[in-house]
Length: 77
Image 1 (cartoon, helix red, strand yellow):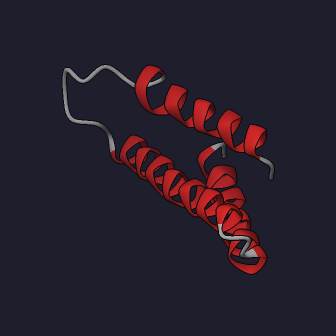
Image 2 (spheres, rainbow, N blue to C red; image 1 turned 90 degrees about the vertical axis):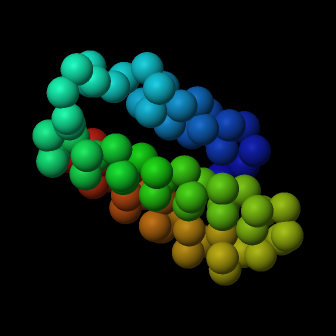
């Protein structure tokens, strides 16, 4: 994943977290909470990908790429 792709993924996450959210007039349902938690995990993995890329650590980058892709596939299920 290159720098441009990472930035695009951050933009997608930002949209999902801040703009594509349900109204907060009552507590969120458990399925919505689980999906929002997945977005937070995705942010963490994306940050780790970015850091590993900066440190030239290919193994850590690969590990977090797999985790990021898994989390996002669960989110979009």
